[in-house]
Image (cartoon, rainbow, N blue to C red; front, side, top):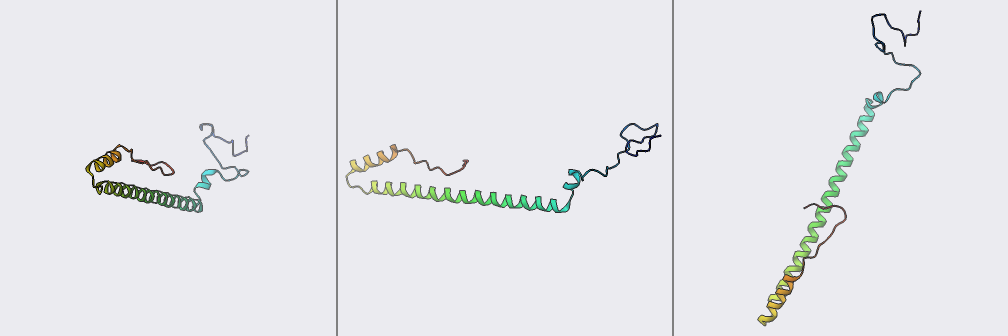
Length: 114
């Protein structure tokens, strides 16, 4: 007669029906994941990572906005200088030169979507 409870089964039961926890094992990973302290640590980590990501996105948007304002101001100042030229031919030539210039592409660190 088999007296080991881990392998004991009745004649009408399929093998593995009686699953008793083994005493010689450490608690499984499922028991660790159900621990309330771990859930709190994971939640705190998720909140901190979301706040840091939000901060990085907002900081990058502010930097991009400042650079864009500087580029627009420089372009407006150049157009104003060209418009203040007295001879019409010089004014026209200056404006054509400005129009021919490609806009300066300002790159920021990291990916920027438009």
